[in-house]
Amino acid sequence: MFRAFGYHMEVSMRLSFMNSFWFLFDVMLNALGNSFMVISNLGSAPWTSAGESLVHVLPFSIGICIIILHLFSLLLSYLLKVRVTMEVIVKSMALAVIFGVFVDLFLSIHQLIYVPEHMVARYIYVFIGLNLVAIAICIYFQTSTIYLPTDFLLKAFGNLVKSYTLATILWTSIPLSIGIIVSIYRQQIIGIG
Image 1 (cartoon, rainbow, N blue to C red):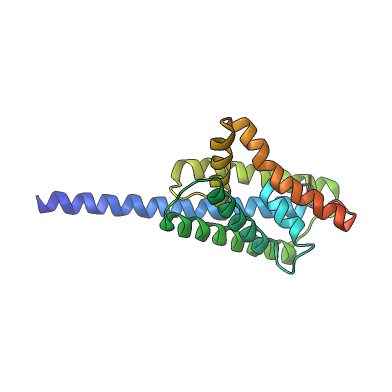
Image 2 (cartoon, rainbow, N blue to C red):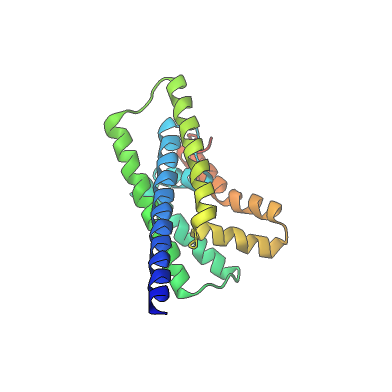
């Protein structure tokens, strides 16, 4: 009996390690993909784009602005009656912090190695970024038990309007609005692609 218990514990630990590995790999891949899109300067994911816009009006890096946006999303989700435990909030914000730090790390590496200037290279960068993010999202949905705060906001909008199509439009309108407001303020289109 104890031998069977030990075997199940060993299998469980291996599965837990593999899930953790894939989860960390997913966050890194997502951040890398987002960094490729930011460096291409041809547009990026909605919330990363908003972070990119905020960099021009706040004294923070893109990664820190992304973390701030995730905190804002979590607070807005709470105001819209999405209830989560403190443990989920801590894990979700930890995930946002890790993601933001990896975005900053990869952007720094891009700055050291190569920033494309020619349009063809920039399109290659955005293509690589989109595909990395797509792969990361597939892994995220398969392995994740922790969700980003923006995912809770999408859920809150879905509960509010009873339509995930309309919820997605509302959800995307927040980072788009941030980009538009900053672009009007700076009189230059920033972070919208």
